[in-house]
Length: 109
Picture (cartoon, rainbow, N blue to C red):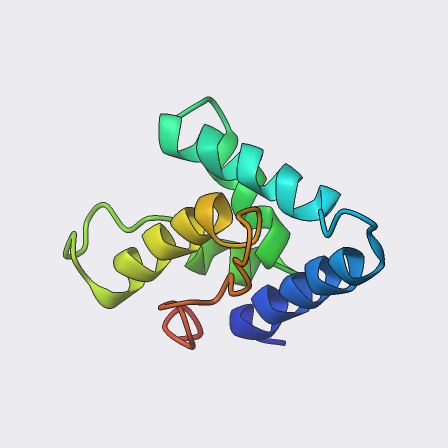
């Protein structure tokens, strides 16, 4: 499985939950939003807590970790930042429907 597929699977769960919700809300999206915000704040363990949502094994989890020794603006580091940002404003925002926006296959290297 790929990280992109994992992200898309989570988006499908959110979409399905919204489809049956009388308010169009999603508890999954709301949870992701809170965990993404904690990761942005730098709360202890929050990065891993958020990213584990999109990793099925330790290899995928390793690809979701920042690369401090690499280029700060590398496509991979930017994709990780977008994945966090999309969790804040994407799935939990009205009309937000794409966790994978600007992430694509970048983390499946």
